[in-house]
Image (cartoon, rainbow, N blue to C red):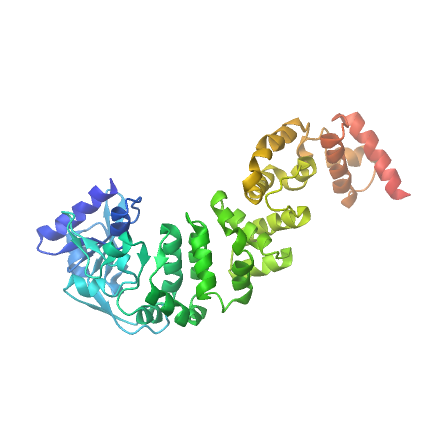
Length: 407
């Protein structure tokens, strides 16, 4: 559907005498028979021409020649052929110049697989051999690799990410240039680095990306992060069997034998959100406490953990343990967790037959921390040790606990 809508953009541009092509990642993915997501279009039409031809548009990047065109609610970035001036911050060009030749536009791009264009008749324009490189499963920089990485240092991590997503190798000269320009990543915003690392960990072959990070030493400017990938290298293949980035970062940190404090430092360095940091740190703390041995499953007493951290965290922890024990995972069943959860008569303090106010009235004691402490004790005894969940039974036990505390 999206490709048909995008074709209407190309048709309209060509009807008015302009050249127009699908370009970049959408061409690469179409040739590789992978799902095509974002469809980018390049043209010799200037932004003013695009705006005139497509009234329903958003001027998203006029300075760089980009207009987002809307077709039946779907947005397509249409960018004028351009060359780029000097890069002043190792990330973006200080200026661009519009040009009329497709080849000049393609030669400014990062890798040959992304420097291809295709017209609406599926005629491929591939001046730098991107299709051949894909057939040989190679990531190769366009032109002179050193120049490409000196222009935009984030391309270093993009190369690792593409190799990881596609299971490709890095071409030799491109690899050499990556090693030589690795220190330039220190100039790139941590948020962009984290995004590329996440995509690498979330790929089909994360072990390829992690090995490349170690070989190129791209993260040398961040020693704790670099050490994380070095120390966890033996177990990165397990990432393929995990579902979320929270689980994947947690497994890496545990595999590297990072303490919860070290794990928090890595999360904070990468500027993860507070929610992400707490979720990752929570799982690392559980792993640190349990200290599971790789591929040697052990029985888990889920009840206390369910009360402590809840179902959602326990379910994530189960998946994490399954990856830790992947080679012998058959003897470790989710059913154990489900059974223990279902068999618990109460699962949270809200399920108890009395409230904190009921306790206060029954015991005639001023409110304070004792209420939470007693309720948590009642929850454990009711959920795990057979205490009846009736007001009478709960109040009786509560009175005994308060009396013991006072003596």
